[in-house]
Image 1 (spheres, one colour):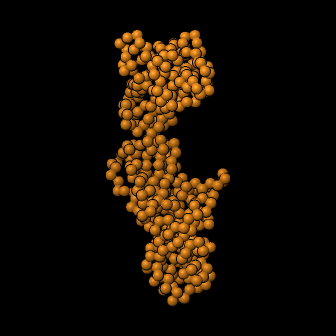
Image 2 (cartoon, rainbow, N blue to C red):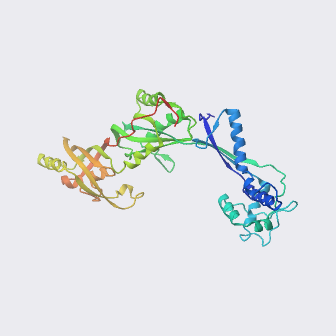
Image 3 (tube, helix red, strand yellow):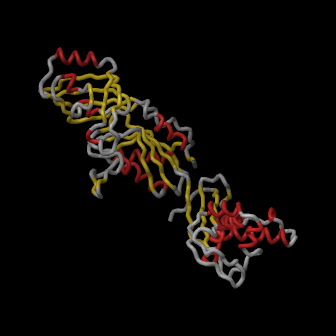
Length: 408
């Protein structure tokens, strides 16, 4: 297993619920017996356990304790012998009317231990010392077994890598496209870029978030689509930019259908640019379109003249996505539209639109659900044969300020 390269660590402790009850018992006993050990001077066992663990880590591994560290160890303890003690706090919830006190030689009637720690602490805080003394031994009875570690987990804050990807072939989805256990595309952008990143930083898993997404059968050209990949629970964060650049270079040398530009480590806050830019960015498209009849030059000129100004579309949710999106009518703008004749009934259509416009539906009309459509504008049936995205106007990733090697 790859070790974490973090220079510091924080430790989270979860103790058995009975610890808090016994802590209260010791405090009450101290007050009643007029001992110097007052309630405020009873040390928190959680703090003691945390100190012991951190001290051992420091001695054995040279790791410093830092409550603000991005690496956290969570230790959960359990104690079977006292696992039901907290149920005495809830005498009216399925328990017998009179519960025996938990004193030496006495047993507690077993009940489900389902109360959460926060509920137990809240209930404990509402109980008076007199009520507590009536229901619990003060001081608490001795135990005959040790607590055990129920679980131990290591978690580190995610590492974020941003860039712009190009998809030079069709039938590649942005993320794995799986329906009922069957892969619909051989690979995905996320896997092509994410797998070498995963090997580099030794993360548990990764997740690609793009500034929008194109269909699997649509190419992503131009300067690429902005994206970031979240590498979750990475063991390694001390990454040189040259190592990141090697991933770009390897995709080029292997003639991968997925390429990446400006790949770099980004700060967590930078990921908000992707979300905030969703509604403000524009996109440029190039489509190969078939029309049922050839257009006259006069008609071509008319459409191109119209396309020099914004065109407001009214788009109902497309039939092809109705199963997963609400049936709404969305106004969307085409910022520009240009059509040119290739040969026969084939035409090249260039479109610039605001984010969220359905370009395929604009071309064929989607059974009248998008208006106006290219079918309406030409007066002939239009069908889209190929579609490419040629530009996404979002400035991302930001210019790096990170030095050659950076631990984020």
